[in-house]
Amino acid sequence: MPFKIKVFCVSMLFVLRVLSSAAQQIDYPATDQVAADFKKLLERPRVPLNPAFDVIQTDSVIIEHGFIYSEKNERIPILIYKPATGMRLYPAVIFLHGTGGKKEDNRKFLYQLVKRGIMGVSIDARFHGERIAGGAHGSREYVAAATAAWENKDRAHQTHPFLFDTAFDLWRVTDYLTSRPDVDPNRIGMGGISMGGIETWLAASVDPRIRVIVLDISVQSFQWSLVNDQWQGRAGTIRGTHLQAAKDLGDSAVNKQNVKAVWDKLLPHITGEFDCPSLLRLIAPRPLLVLGTENDPNCPLPGANIAYASAMQAYRSKNAANKISRDTTPKLFHTSTTEHFKMALDWFSKWL
Image (cartoon, rainbow, N blue to C red; front, side):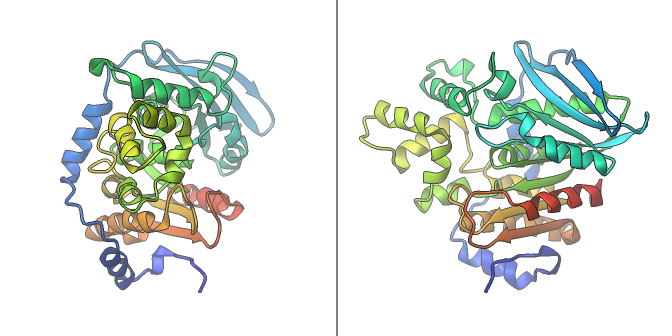
């Protein structure tokens, strides 16, 4: 039987089956409390955005390449594709790359958004792309930053370069977009692939300005992965950090205990109130599309099922089951597909 889930026709029986088989019963705090706690953890002094962009215009698209500031010494490189149809209010979509990638990886997606009358926006995540002088070397600098954060002894100045800090940057990018005279502040979407998808559910869950969300190969449960010894794929994205942590803790190899130690320090409460099954609840009733693959080691399917079932309960409680959908491609591992590329575009077009 092929593993395809189309949620517009999913039955309550399916949801209950997933919940009953999940073997992960966590009483998460109320959604308002989770949102307040997450904002408090990530918040830092706001600085002027000071945007600066170069503009290139072609017959079909206006391309803006520049930056804004999210913190005093933190500049976010941004790539914007805008329809060349004259001044008006456009819907906008922020779309994010995966580990080791860069904003330019999303140019094809941004251009396809433009063809649908939507402004496309992409940024370099922390320690990726132009965030490194001369350009990052894949994920090398990202892993080095995560390792430095792990070894940091100054609790008053703890950074969170592994996922969390870029989520804060996304709030600032949203601040910038809502300030632009050519963006409709009520029609902003966000999506991403892998790491970019995780950063999306982290940022968008607690930011209601993000009205439409697409998550590709990024929905999971960190807690389920840890408890069920399926953490290897996720830990592999910053393998060097985990190797150093194992050494620092006197272990001969990376194991469940030292993986949890890294997550507890770099991603506080990621196995609790900030895990995906908890934060996805906060997105309801905004339109949400979840895309994945059956054999993804980074986002194991049983954990993804738990997260999705949690979200589905929230959507049903708000009478918004028509605003959530899921598609899981059978047999594939951690990869984004051409079909999912189109589904993401169609979802943004439908709801923005």
